[in-house]
Image (cartoon, rainbow, N blue to C red; front, side, top):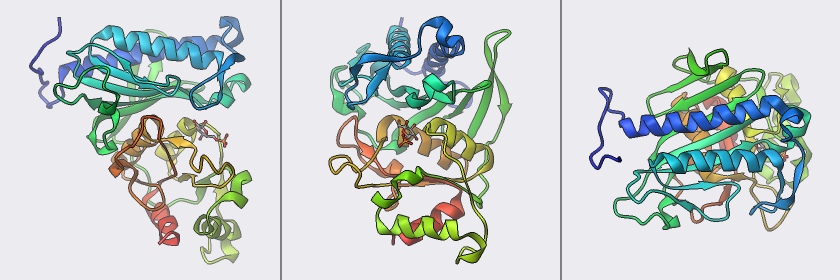
Length: 322
Ligand code: F6P
């Protein structure tokens, strides 16, 4: 039975929120298991369908979406949920107090090569009195998130999460099935010598980004007077995990590769939750021109440019955009 008045834990966190997070983690544990089984679970390869974004759906995208959707809706804590794989939001319990936006399987191109992938989630409060089928409930700025995180399916399965009081990392102990705290107070070093961007798009970027990256590549011989290294996992969840572990700058800027789609990453279930984590760990997250978490979304699948990571380095990049 759902409670009408929120019951708070000593530290002020709503017990329903804790239960919702546990529900999300139950879904992620199941996804982690399927991922680890790979071809044995028959989850590799593509489906014959495209998702709403026009991208070919992988079997694992579909399986993860169904698992996440069913478990979160069944919990009764969600007024509605929305997913990268669903064209519209899905109504839940009219008494549910929360909204969950998620990317069930980020980094789909890595699935079939047994490389890093993950699930990203963002939780917001449902507006008082809003109907479960009112999709506009999700159009809240990222500053309204009450919890955000991702589960990374790598050599170990890790959860990285914030409820607005810092960032913690947990490792899934597969012997008893619990996520154990392995890193308290995650903090991104302000300076870095590492950048992450898809260099094959270079000729399509705006001038400020071209100039910034040129200066990084010139290393000691350029105005930055230091050598930079580059990394690109091609799964935001993996690239942002590296930032949170050892600093760096991650960018997916505006480009003119496809005139109809100048941005790649999605605001509600990629950029916002990752920005919440990065800011909570002392980093900065921007589109190049404005703080991502301050943007009011205009549609649930809106895309944005992203520049996030180590404070000093992101601020240097933003100076090129002024
Ligand atoms: O969801 C989009 C995504 O897979 C991100 O996780 C990743 O950062 C990016 O696309 C990779 O893009 P590209 O294929 O252009 O390298």
